[in-house]
Image (cartoon, rainbow, N blue to C red; front, side):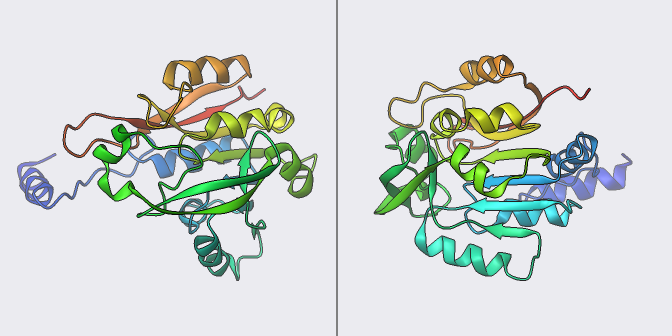
Length: 244
């Protein structure tokens, strides 16, 4: 980097803008795309889709396979349907949450919607991100991943599972053991400290669990950071089975 580039970089950093070379080493999006291609992924389960940010992101970066998105919030689910309309290979499932058992549950709706959760949020979460405070709630149908996979995935699909469920990751996996056994890759949020009531599925436990299931951690990036202290509270991990 020459002196002129350093000056521009420091100037932009004052406004919260960081410029890096677009490589797999510096870009989670490009790294994800490279991994999709390397492992020949052709079906993505987008669990906790919100308004479709993840699905649009992978398509913008070159993914051309099928996507099935799952979203539990009624108002957000309507927006998700609008986003997916016109995309022939992007399907939005009927509104539901994904958990360990089929039934009905109450989901707590966060002010920013993306932090909405089926778990009870701890102060460690709301203090680190005040915009995640719970403002309302609604009932939602809960389905298991195995039940949904039987409906939407074909036997020959090379399946990748993305899980963004705000502390409910372990419950999703409990209800998807058959689907996990056939999946090629998994991406999920991994809490480093407890952010939800009775949350024990933290970083060391997650790594051991996924290794026992035959997966290797191939990418981990900073996710949720306490804006006051700079402490990383949650990361985003991508796991794959070793390619034969």
